[in-house]
Length: 107
Image (tube, rainbow, N blue to C red; front, side):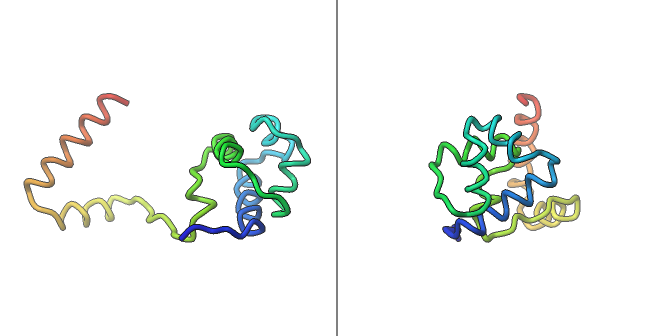
């Protein structure tokens, strides 16, 4: 479910920014917006354009889903992967392996 509570979005941005060790001015400069605008976004007192959101996410190295969604992404662990692979057929595992192999070759 998407969040439209600007204060909650701002709080998430604040928390993520603090973890990176960046200042509001750092994020604002790298995102191409004013310090004041970014501060207002973190306070939740201003709506932002999609382009601005994407630039901020890029600066913080996060996806928009991390601040706009209530759904928590499942942590990727060896156990999760093994469980998932064990739940599919041998034919599907071969396809997954080929896709993973192709992805890793091209990245």
